[in-house]
Length: 549
Ligand code: NOJ
Image 1: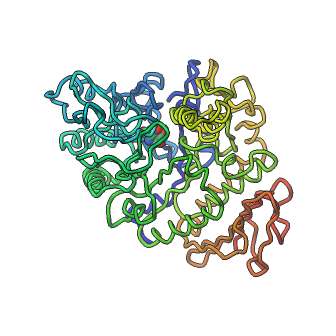
Image 2: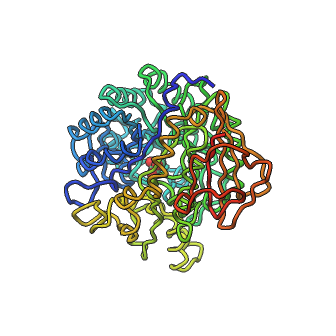
Image 3: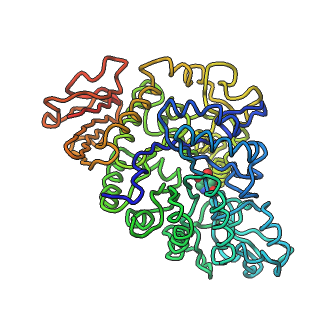
């Protein structure tokens, strides 16, 4: 398949969650100068694109996903000069810069909202979604993602505003052409400053049904219901995205990754089919709790097969197991105890073997694991706090509620980066904003860099392999039939180059069908390299091997 932007096939994107990456001034909070001084880490890994979670001005109700100044930098993170330097230094290293763009909502501290809420007839009155009370109450029964009603009352207007996320994240009114124009010119301003792409946050929710009907869905424990109206992107939403594409993405040739709710492949394809001119690729967003309870290797294989079939002739894939919204991949899909190292490598080898652009989330390259905080007070994540509250409402004990929150919490992935074995893992000289995982003395970048059999070196080798192998960056995928759900056998091929891989998703050995075992060929990578590599025949627990045939 030929994409207009063929260069996106050669990217490996590294996601930085700035708050937790590297602190440079001892305030316990990661910052932009900290990222700059760690750019060599990215170059050493072979990364050629950096996705920066939001660094804009924000009161941090949702760690930067609540923006109060789209053309300003969050004070805790540094200055615009720091950002300019970051962008320049990335470009010098051949690293593209991808900004997180959060335009479904802003912060309630954005000047637009402050003006909008002041009266019913001001310049920005229609920049947000305002509705009159219904029978003295909220306009409908819709739930907010972070708990409670999605509506908040403002006495100055005698009206409610709509917020899909927290009440400090009011939704912008995309039905207003003036608002749309403000957003487009802000995007243009960033592109002209040198941004190479956008990861566009929660973008499938832009268009809302103007009559806001009650949701018939079963209520959450606190009485409010999620609206099925927002599960599929409404035609209006796709229209707004195409406007964005026509106005910014296409003329400036920027890379775009949409974060979308896509319950099936048809909907996914609507966002990324090239002829539709929306996004280059998409991160399908599924509530972590749903995914954790329904995930299995069998389902993963089905999803891979379905996504591949849906997009192979006309589209592209964002490949990721981790980001700042999910627990750590080795804890979730691998085994963070006995098989920590081999399972972390197995997951990496699977992901980088798949067609699409791979994403590496900070810390994944050293196999960072989940972290359970002992009390709910130590959590920062609003999602974890909401899970805790909802669990108590259905009668769970505080211990059970805490356990549920620990399982799904996004803080699992947000603990500070583990750079070395010194005090505070080399992340900060001060008190870290969020607890550091005590396993940093064993799991850290410094020790893995010096160990050729580490997870870090497995990532390096995979990234280098992808750069040299067109079968990996551009080849077709074949999912070979195997008798066990926990075994994956995959083939990639491009113009005569053929690679084969096996991945065992289990703590039990796996038989590989005789017919699939290669008679000749070279082992390129093995998750058991420390133990002498692939021994032939069946696979050991979490073993993974890549062959060139
Ligand atoms: C998705 C982001 O990834 C998440 O971190 C955030 O809480 C919501 N969108 C709201 O912006």
